[in-house]
Amino acid sequence: MIGRRLATTEALLVLVSPDSDNELNQIEEWGRENGISVEAIDVGNDIESVYDRGTEYVGVTLGGDGTYLEGVRQFSPKQIPILGINAGSLAFLASISPEDLTDALSEVINGTATVDQRQQLQVEANDIDCTGINDVMIEHVPPENPVDRKITNLEVYAEDEFIGQYEGTGLAVSTPTGSTGVSLSAGGPIHYPKNNATLQVIPLHTHRLGVRPLIVDAETTIRITSAGPANLLVDGGRAQTTLSEDTTVTIQGAETPAHVINTSYDDGFFTSISEKLGWGVREGRDDTGSARVSAWRSPGESSSEESLYERAKRVATEAARAAGPPLRELHGQTESIEYKTDKSDIVTEADYKAENIITTVIEREFPDHGIRSEESVQRESSSEYTWSIDPLDGTGNFAHGNPNYSVSVALLEDDTPVVGVVYAPETNELFSAIRGERATLNGKPLETTDRTSLDECMLLSGYDPDGTFLTHSYRESRGVRRLGSAALNLCYLAAGSADAVWEYDTYPWDVSAGLVIARAAGATVTNANGQTYEVNRDLDSRNELVGSNGPLHETLLSHLTSADTLQTSVTSMNDD
Image (cartoon, rainbow, N blue to C red; front, top):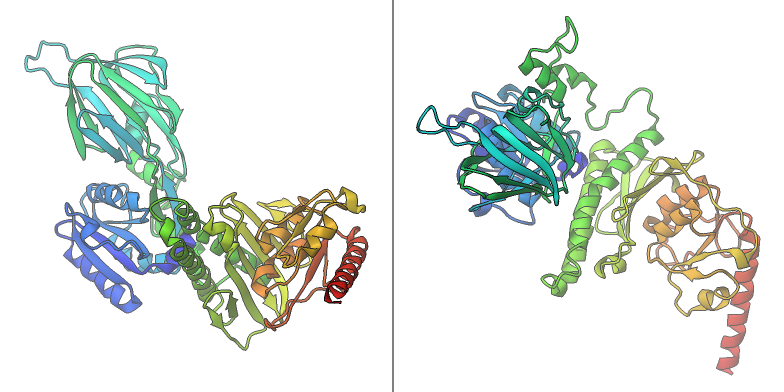
């Protein structure tokens, strides 16, 4: 989940604790003013009665940490991001004050909030099979007779490896979001919870000198066997059971994370820790979350050091990455038996969701710019700047479960591409460039190859209607590949994964971003006549593209000319 996607929010699901009527009224009034529907559900009730799978939701909790934990339980399986409003008497997870709630919500729908993933854990024991975002506590059962044994004996395994015996009050298995106080009391570390996929095994009042807190990867399966009766509580009692002798508990990281929204009105993690534990981060300074508000930018604003092109590249990057999660989710459904009869609907939904995210972000950041998308959005403008967008380049691949598809976003100045971003969601490859600067792949510079001989080169082909390019190039080269995404073809040329690319026909949204990236990496891109390739706004005329590493270009053009001549001759003979 990427923060920019929040700009497409259509509705709020609000879990409401008792005595939160004033805060709920504020949210409902804010929703009416901003065209966002609000569904209120009393805490303890299920959201299924109002949940619609096709709606872009934000989950809001009104209450303390208990309400927040209930929100995590209901929202996380549906991948709904969570915003916690502290309307209760005690809250650490829900940290936004009621005074800031409408400003925080505005930040969310403007797409300037952030979203981090919080590791959850999965617990199985007795009749419990549930997830938790904080911890699992296994503790001794208090004896009826005060002189009876007051410790518990637990055997702990990581996968099949025996860790040891834990004798004492019990132990906790904690996520990075779980109790920092419990960890510190056992001599353990402070876990920074954002995007941290680990679990920690923590002894409670241990009776063994050698037992220390242990950190494992979230994919590690932890098994705990109790030598006697013990109480098990998940997230402070949201689920609980009593373990009998020799009962085994299985704990591992949950597959679904919690998506936690952070705004400038939240206290930062270390600020919260320092306040609750009485630690001073900086002497004589108020380290509250509100002190950071001035550092945030509203849509349409940029820092004084950021040029228009740099800002455009940043926004395009954020928008393209934000489109990735829904595309990956829907791509995973295309080969599912449940969805095979609805492939066209899935592709249509993927196109719409990706386009909606990207165009919403761009419209908020650059309201004066024009937009041209392969899909439905066409916004003309008097500005010299226009965005060219293909939210899903490679729909055929996407529909068949093939990972070679991409998101292409480009900024054009007077019809000349000047900023390009291409994102491949399945491989998490992000190609980007500004005209006249270096092209990069995930921040690392790109450069084309320097091969000059066709028989040493790998070629990429687009749509080849009569097989001419393949027929006359395959034997003369190291091979011809067709990936099914024109944007990726140009990016792989830029990255040196291919030496040349040929496209029979192109549309602006297919190649605008790739053009900037390929040329910034050193590629030469022309039409079949050797003239500089230009984006063609006339969609009814064919626009052939020939791209190469540069040194190979004249050889490639000569080869294409001879192939065309041969094909024309063969066609003429067949006509006779």
